Amino acid sequence: MNIRKLVGFIAIALLIFFVVTRPESAAQSVENIASILSNVANSVSDFFTALV
Image (cartoon, rainbow, N blue to C red; front, side, top):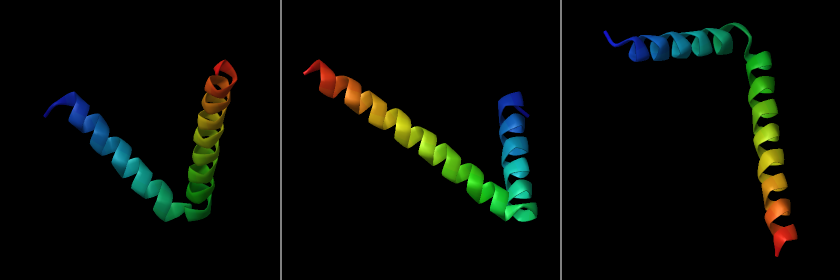
């Protein structure tokens, strides 16, 4: 088996385990990641708006 596939399967298994055992923490983590990505997108948009 390819090591890349093995690492992928392990990551998915850990994600499922995390969601099943601590759903509130998993949801909070997803919200935090979404917030960070939104902030990055807004910052990039502000940067390009300032250039124009």
